[in-house]
Structures are given as C-alpha cells and as structure tokens.
Image 1 (spheres, rainbow, N blue to C red):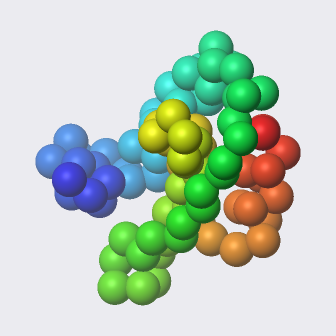
Image 2 (image 1 turned 180 degrees about the horizontal axis):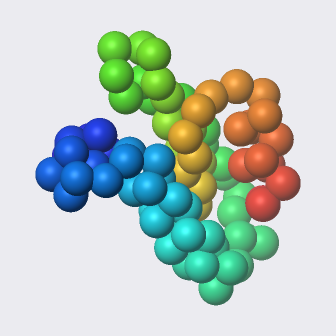
Length: 84
C-alpha cells in the first residue's frame, strides 16, 4: 500500500509516515552489521507516475533490504554507500 494511501487512511501527513518508517528502519540498521555485504544492489523506483522516487539498497547475497530512502540521485547514493 502506498505511503500516501496509508496517510490518507490514518488522516495524517505522508511525511509523518516517512518519519516513522525512517525512525524504525534507522533503529534496525543500528542493530544490524553491514560489514559482511559483498554485493550491493541499488534501484530507484518511481512511486507516483515518475514524480516521486524511493531508493533501495539490497544485500544481493543475503537477499535483504539494507537501506530505503525517499528520493533519488547522487545524494541518496552517497548516503547508501556511507552506511556500508
């Protein structure tokens, strides 16, 4: 279910949903060691007709998501690489 739809159902701003997701994803990442990531997969996926993107980082060997952020571009890539 898209973040905007969740926000609509909960009657809060979509940015609040992103803040909650980022908070808990950040806590999970702090508890997780990424030192063993040997193959990193990166994808930028449009979420709304090409106007809004989400950048994903995936451990290709373990088949698990290791990073998700709203937006795309070199800044998001630097953010992802800095945590690995």
